Image (cartoon, rainbow, N blue to C red; front, side):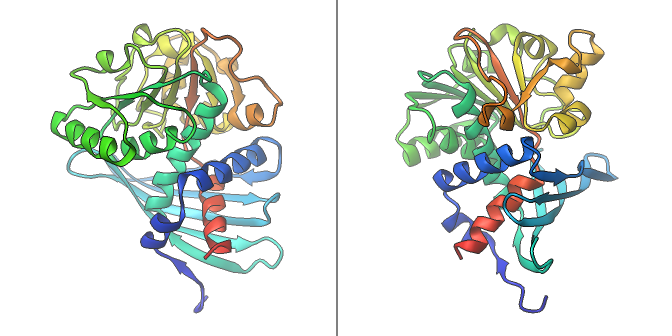
Amino acid sequence: MENLPFIDTRTVREKLSFPVLIAVVREAMIALSTGKVDQLLRSFIPVKEGHIFALMPAANHAAGHFGVKVLSVFPDPSGELQHEGYILLFSESSGRPLCMAEAEDITRLRTAAASAVATDALARADAAALAVLGTGKQAAAHIAAIAEVRRLDRVRIWGRNKDKAMDLAKAEADALGLACEVCDSAEAAVAEADIICTVTAARDPVLNGAWVKPGAHVNVVGSSTPVPAEIDSELVARSRFIADHRAHVLLHGGELLRAKKAGVVSDDHVAAEIGEVLAGVKPGRTAADQITVYKSLGHAVQDLAALAWLYQNR
């Protein structure tokens, strides 16, 4: 491995655009849901309270590669979760390692791209108003990614730190030319939203089902372990609930687990995986006034697909 190519953060940021990554993640999710990927459940080792070491392996037989992501998930002083680690890609034909990359920015970008893929498949075609709950790196990435799949005419942002929300609104307005407004409450931010992204580190719900209008689409992204939940059980129950990967969401989807514990849904409430919707195996939105929820946990198949693209286009 002494000559193993290493793809650094600067290369990731320069080359991995959202139009490219949205297409790459779309194909990876179809492969995952159509039996072309072997992927183990993620392994978590608690390091200390709120700090996790994670191992995420997968083999994408359709793409001819396999590999693993290893990372630490640690909160920074502001409470935002930082993902630091490495992704290692192997060739399925030779078994040789092909390249390695830092994981943080690939994780950030592929997560937002996955939400954009789900939004494109599940949100109404006329969706134009976006609400983002959260002010960290995922919030900025999600605004840019969602703008690739819908013509947004306004963005409303809420976060516990209003100064950070103001900074985010200004930065995204300057970068994307969008009208960005900061709201004093999550309820106000989502009041007229067609698309909602929850990208917080909250342990308890920041979004209530009573606030979400009929026909909206919600990407639930911030919680990736069984305990935290960003949306309440009412919203889970009201929605057509789509998972990124059913087996993972049944074990690690905090929002679904809380709703099950409350007795308002069962495992059957997971209507489909997003890859099944993309492949035409199962329907996504089935009515204009239906609320759709996409539960995102993030998967190694996404990371490996992004790294494979970078390796092929280095």
